[in-house]
Length: 420
Image 1 (tube, rainbow, N blue to C red):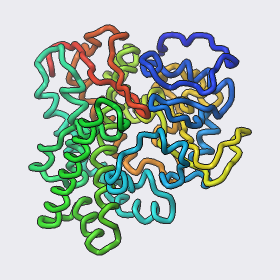
Image 2: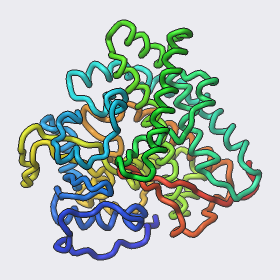
Image 3: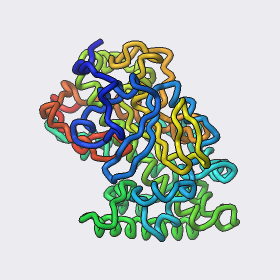
Image 4: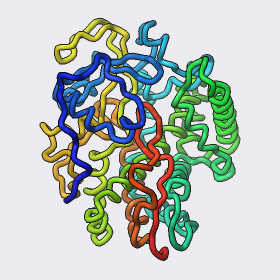
């Protein structure tokens, strides 16, 4: 086993208040800061680029507890004016029309809405679709240059999860071909005075129009698929129009971009640990366990979305005011040495591996089985068909996405021998 570059020694007493979570060095490698925060305590006030201050939970036990804490709710209505003034949440009317999906709901509403999507992502159904997913992966590999270099984001990772998703939810090819990946950036909202505001709003309008087309198409050409069932639930008044549009929004955006990013973080980890990469290529039976370790080692879901107390509450000795935003660092929890031995080492034999990459509790990712299958197929196919896979740029030149909550790379230029 090999490890990433050794983490520097840290002094827990030097943490500022609030701790800024921003800047290229932080996005390239947040783990030294997370180590420092864990050592200083489980809960910290942090500052995001938008100016919003939040409370960040770091250690594994504290994170696991917070994710299952029924005092914490996800609905944005719980947020106080101090949070709302700087949160740069989606503007109205789009916030009310697109942001009432599962991630922002609490029971009992959350329970009912989740029941509409659960059957589409069961492990049994995912397994039945594996041969089709393999075809999609091979088609993308076939389209890569016969020998490197190639960008594995633009050539593979940006497309494979969406093609899989379209199959799973019943998005017809004519509409799937017209989906603009740029629309996914609407989950990175910008403030009213930001120079990119006009482009951001254009993305919002474009995505709303696309969702309306999907709904119209499924109402006219309904089949036995998830999208048709959601439209049917709206027509039976089991869902409101806003809930329908929001759930389709969540499927199209949250259902693919995190997997794209997880493919890239997994590849970077393997390329930095060539002995593990070689071992995995030579023994594909390791893939299920390897994927769990890669999810733990560097998760695309770095931070969870907002949670709120409805009254001033104690959290592990820290008083958190009502309506202040609270976020859990899944990446910090997954590198906690109190829970994982040698946490900064990529160990494909790690077992058990109770990582929190998909969350925990009632908001555990409903698409976890699908994401696991996608990662196993993507990594297995890339390693098997691209011999000599290696970075084609310097490690320090990897472009990490500037997203507040997620990890991943914008591009991943690689070299390889003749494509198999």
